[in-house]
Length: 212
Image (cartoon, rainbow, N blue to C red; front, side, top):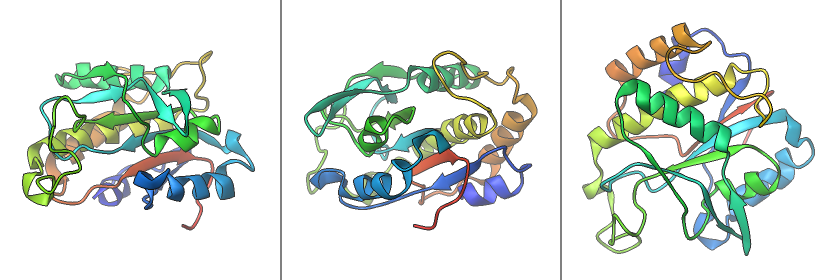
C-alpha cells in the first residue's frame, strides 16, 4: 500500500527502503544481520528511520524514547520524535512518549549510529495479551492501522526530503513546513487509499536501494 501511495508522489530526494525481517524476538537477529551487511560499512548513508511494531491494537499510540537492546540502554531520535509529534498535532491525533522495557528492531540501527524512531501501541500496560494466544489477526484494529499509516507516511516522506537529519539541523515539521505540498498529497492519498490488512514493518530513508 505504501508503494502505491508513493508512486503517486514526486520522487523524494532520498531512497525510501521498506525492510521486514524475522528473528526480532530472538535478539534482533534479522536486523542485526542487515545492519552488519549494509549499515555498518557506511552508516552516514542512512539518514534516519521509523520502526513500526506492536501496532495492531491497544488503547493509545506511543513513540518510544528509550529501551534496552542487547543489554545496552538505547535512546530513540528526539528529532524524529519531534517530527512525529508535530504531524500528529497537525492531524489532530494524540501521541505520547514512553520508555519501553526492550527495544524492537530499532535497537540495531540506533547502536549503529542511525537516528531512529519507533511507534508502538501494544505495550504491556495497554495490551496485557501481548505474546499470548489471544494476540492474533482477529484483534487487529483496522481504523487504528489507518491512523498509523497516515502518521508514518507523512513522517517518512518528510524525512526522505531533508538533506540532513541531525541534532544540530532539525527537520522542518508539520503540514506547514518545507514539505507542505508533499505532505498534503500524502495526507490525501492516505485518506483515500490505505489498505485494510497489510503494512510494512519498517521504512528507511537512505541514499540508495539495497536488495534484501
